Amino acid sequence: MSAAQKRDDDLFQPSSRPAPSIGTIFFSFLSIAMIVAGFYIMSAAFSYDDTAAMLMFSGGLALDIIAFMLIFMFIPARDKTSLK
Image (cartoon, rainbow, N blue to C red; front, top):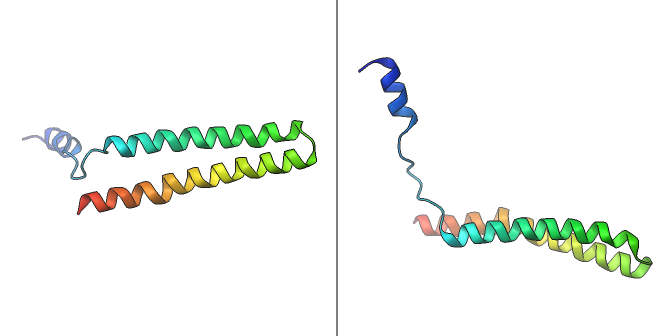
């Protein structure tokens, strides 16, 4: 076996981690959509009066916080429990 063949075999080893579940993929796309919607709501808030703008901006910020929590806290915890 040549060195190049050995390197190619090491490069294409199967992963020891299982493929992501459909739930993980669904929650990933959901959180991406929530992030985009939150940024849109925050930017649209500047075209309203003071009280509505404050509420819309706060709502968009809350939506982004929830989306980031979903993708960085809940999805990894969900995957770790399924690996046991």
